[in-house]
Image (cartoon, rainbow, N blue to C red; front, side, top):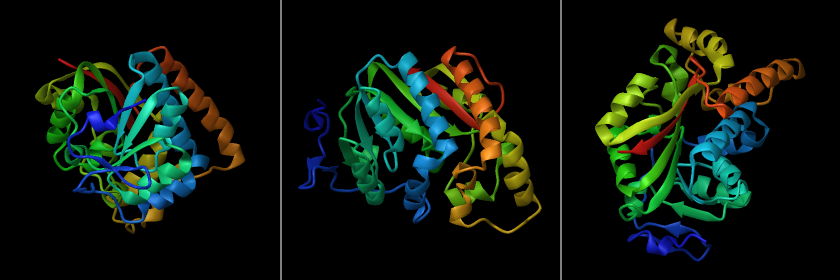
Length: 275
């Protein structure tokens, strides 16, 4: 059982069983986007595959039975980690995401940003940032906070969108500040006291769809997408395409489970340790 009261100087337990901080500053995220994601996450190949990849690296590199999912939205990833048998704490600043996570069955929920929550130094053995860092203007400051909170042997698990060459209007609508590659992440970690212990790209099968359906139309100034377009790749697919997707996703899972690198894709999957 996670004793959150002993880990934070700012949080208190509300009457509905959610830990809250006095101040809660949200991150760059489109209005109503969390609810739209909540409606499609359970049926989306994109979210399912990301969860599978994340759970594989957690199983490989996480030595703790306590895991903190920071900025975890509706609790889709947190629930999967919880179902692995880890005591999982979701830290989410958006109240809509908090209540969606509660509906899903996430047991430990904190309605706060990491900075507002006031977790004490070296109190977290494992932290996840899953498609969060790109929404933060000052990514160096966030990683320094995480470094402060992680135990000496703690691990950071991270996913972010990959390659600025794939930047499109969808990134802007999504509230992204940037996309990353391995060298950019390495430079960022060098500044904040981390070293990469595992890295791969994933969603290799989405490179051409993303480029031709998002990046290229953005460059030639085709209409700006609505919020609902942001996750169109993440929605359900036709039966004919499902077979190809399954083959591609199984190939990626096979490589990730054997710690083999996928050389180019639309997302990064990284594990880092303090030094």
